Length: 291
Image (cartoon, rainbow, N blue to C red; front, side, top):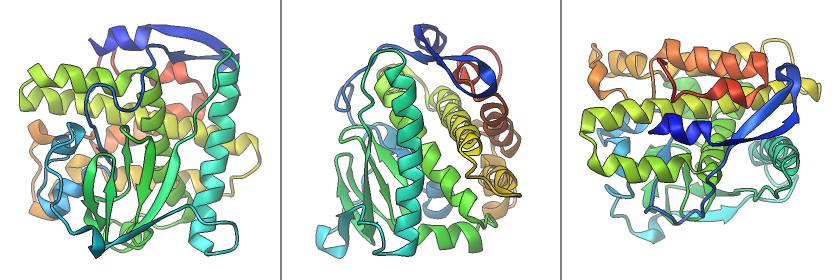
């Protein structure tokens, strides 16, 4: 089913070493097909809180929190906060990349809004707290992030470095691209008739494609001379540290493959690297064949 979505694509202009790229068609509005919240770090929600991220994919399992327990704000102006500034720079570069690609097929790129929050936030996909990690909500086309998460990424998950942080953001923007091109609404529709195990398997393909899109952004950043020595390795290490198998072994001492919903460490590394080395969206078809 997702192979068909992935094949419904239009030719667009070239980028990077890949020559030309294709962006799937079948675009939809953020509210179509129900509420889906894609949770990053990517299995962390389940590993830390015991909550299945697929519940959020369908808009369920939302935390019943008092909105007063946290506060949210739009991305601040430059200079207000160093880490927030960094987020702003990364988001701006993703906008440059995807605006260029959508323009090549004669379409505007509707950028996602970034919301910084502390403790808890009321999103278009329901209430979420800081334990959720950064996430994208298709219903309101916003990326939500509690900046304290980056400290956890370093201390708890062994993924330090600014480019590891950038990878997380680029992954979430990858979900925004999937929302615009119809991949997320199709998954939300199809998973209603799937077993939990089958939904997990397709969730892995969704997440790995977002990793590949993050790699494409890293390729673009390299073309803009924004990368320093070791940056790509930081992102690859982050992908490795947050694979389902690595997270489960860290938290409980063993892994249960049928519960994987973001991909193994090897898969996450491989798909990010594929996007990074090719710079080609055609290389990110995770819905055809094995992953």
